[in-house]
Image (cartoon, rainbow, N blue to C red):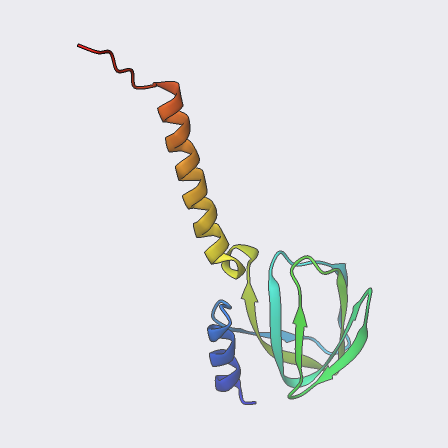
Length: 124
């Protein structure tokens, strides 16, 4: 898959526009999390990603996918690594749920207002 196809795929899946990340040779980033889901295409070099469930080396042409808040460590190969990554925040991942929740909250507010000031009908 080429970078353009990958970016198009991510856009269809609701990811934000891609960015290119470059990491130095032999570097590492210890245990950490991200507040977003990440999906990346390795453009050059390699990266080893270790999670609680899996440790794997990703090389040129491979795709890695990490869930939001998934603890992991990153280790960059002897030539470093460059990858194209898309990010999706939980809100973007669940936009339809967010809209539904807004509608439910609005309906609840309307019900609350109507119960606070009940309409009273008195016969004339």
